[in-house]
Length: 115
Length: 108
Image (cartoon, rainbow over all chains, first blue to last red; front, side):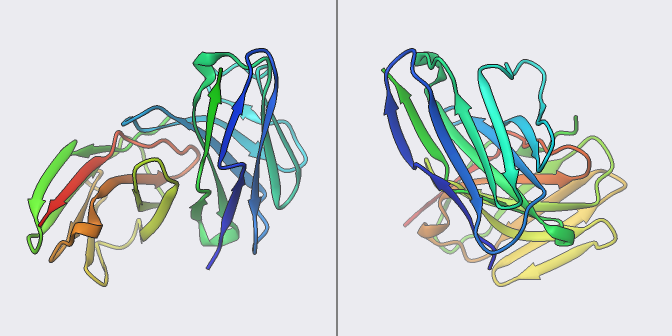
């Protein structure tokens, strides 16, 4: 079946640095990918919709200059957390829509800890 | 944005019992999907039901959809300890937003 891979699964970075998280669709092309953030025991919060070849669409309240999204190819979207702050520590999950099947597949998520 | 809201928020049952979770949404959808999430992990797609379908089965899963009430239910029959997880519904249309999910605990 379709698989979405996220990397890294866990990352620790220092305050003020930037960290990049990759989301890959392994066996299908995804023109649209989504990035979510999840706090412990909470639901997923949609951060942005990533469209291949165009600018991402950010949800209200999400800083686009802080959370840079690049969808350079049909199988890869990246989320870069810039000038990371401890409050950015969270679980980040990406998902991708598989073509016209309208099914959404999720990555395994990435734990970010900013120290 | 549309939002799925699941209830109950938490459900604790014993192994072998059935678990029923409900989901309501606010706007029209093309289809509705149910996912499960183990603690600290990604989401796993369970089942998709299209807006023109009323009921769908997959193994021990049974999903219903009532578009007039904008609601869906997920029934897990003969639950197992391994079913312990959080379950989310997601309506697919122009935007995707999850509800808070139902945390299911299945005890031996």
